[in-house]
Length: 166
Image 1 (cartoon, rainbow, N blue to C red):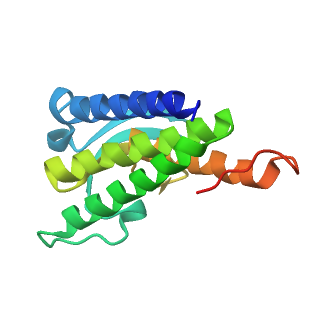
Image 2 (image 1 turned 90 degrees about the vertical axis):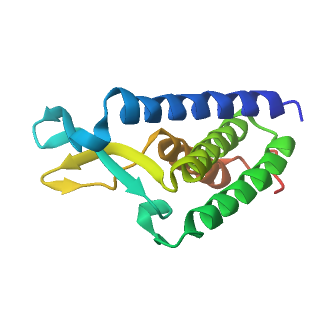
Image 3 (image 1 turned 135 degrees about the horizontal axis):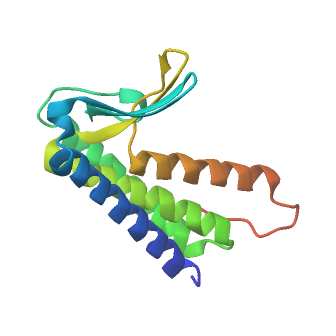
C-alpha cells in the first residue's frame, strides 16, 4: 500500500501530459485540418504529426462505426484500469508501481477520448525507409512502456524476490 500514492501520482502526470498534448493537437495546432505536419527527418528516419481518429483498440483492432462501440471499448478500458488499481494497491517494487501507474494513466486518457469524441486522438507518426509504424499518442506510449516494464520484471526479478498478486 505504501506505493499506492507514487503510482497514482505517476498515473496523474501521464494523464495530464496526454490530455494537454491532445488538446494542443486538436485546438492549438489544428491537426484535424492540417492532417500531417513533418517534424523531423534524419536520414531514413522520420517523425510526423499525423491526425488519426482511432475507433478501435491497439493497432485499430475492433474498430467499428456503431453508436455503442466507443462506449463498450471505454467500459472495457475502465474495468481494466480498476483491476490494475487493485494490483497497484499490492505492488511491492518501485518499477512495478510506476509501470502500473503508467498503464492506468494511459488507459484513463484513452477512455476520456472515447467518451468525449467517440474515438481516441492519435497523432505521433514514426517512419523509416518508407514504412510507417502505427500512429499513437502519449497514453499509448505510457501503456506500452508500462507493459514492457511488467514483462521485464516478471522475466528478470531474482528468485525469491517479492512477487505481485493480481
